[in-house]
Length: 595
Image 1 (cartoon, rainbow, N blue to C red):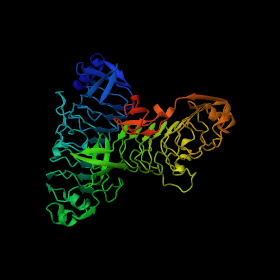
Image 2 (image 1 turned 30 degrees about the vertical axis):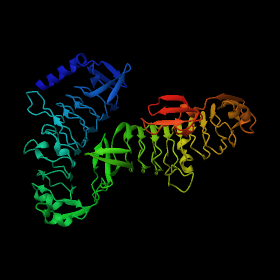
Image 3 (image 1 turned 90 degrees about the vertical axis):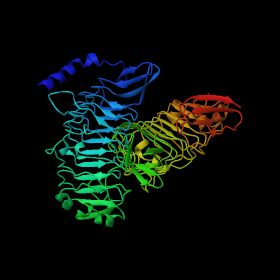
Image 4 (image 1 turned 180 degrees about the vertical axis):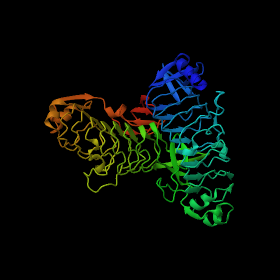
């Protein structure tokens, strides 16, 4: 009763003591230090799928978000949350009784979690503590009637990834009998059962898959391990072990890195396993059972990565349940090492709650079902990506904008031989309304049903070939000057604007009669007469001279922070060119200079 009354008092007075200073995008903030422009997330936030940023802008000032304050999401309907990778703490009861929250990733930057932070999150099934050597501490409740109330008290977690040292106050009192898959990351050097088990009556009786990182000096004794069926070790040199139950030696299969089976068969404790098999240490596994572990090699910014080649320092994105905007970098840092991100693996974000996927320059491929997420609204594909796979963005029913950035390499889809097949099309069952096409693509990518609902299409100057598309919903069309010819567009009957960048009229197959009467044709200054005398373009009733739209507004730069140089007609050039130049910064700042 005392605990109930205490909680009731908190709820009744929360509104008075935790009124927000400002709100941005449904997230409430309190100012911590005005002079330093710092703030924290505060009570009461709204929304179901939220991304908590590292910085937030309010009234033209950029604030640094230090952490998540007390009670911020208390009893809310939040389903997914992405915590910024520079936030430092999670406050008391911050996610208390969030009954719909299913998965949480704690970034490496967070060092403290308040008491009862995730207490009563009945549907919380997956907890990921990202990789770092900095310890993560959890505070005990100060309620005297209950001796030990910790951040994850009474949570029924199924999958637990511990990528860093943790305090004994963090996980104790969680329903650890519910854990089925436990992974101890490579950066954890010391681990004891006291971190998970409060006393001799606690149990890990549901544990079926255990992965042991290479950093552990001593593998602890795991109580009640008779249900363990798979144990993966990630070091070629057998670690010291405190032992396992006899039932574990008989029932579990011990998986060891390739070439090390003989060593483990002779090592103390490990030699007691009845079945020892080798597995590909650098491979991805099958969650339903196989001979490789379905766990990442490391986490960074809530994204899971698997190492493809440790010596070459290469990796790829692997399956992750994540929400909001996701940026895939060209390189990622782990344990002091820099890895090149080669691509996005199969099903990496399938069925996740991501809303925007921005791939920075570097990755070269997107695997099958790589971003098949129904909430996905925006996709940015850089010039480094040269291959997309079957069903890559399939069933992204909320997709609105696709940006294929400027580049010289062909974007290929080595899919169905039938050009018009929809069975395995990368954009199957999608309906984006805006497409920026900045380079040549395999014709099969554009001829599927994925782009039948386009309302705005921009073809960049680097595109030299373009196939006929249905385009029955198209309202605005912009055509770069690189096209040798423009195919016939008889079904584009709703066109209202056509913007051309070439001073010399390009050969065109023709348009629907309604387009000639209803659409305005915008042409570069000084070229109107040439277009009026063209046998196709001259049919337009309304021809207007204007600035090239590709020169300033529509150029898609690859990386923020870079400077791209263009001619007035939108052709990318270098700084040595004479005459008028347009400089476009990665932050969208534009300068016009004369040389």
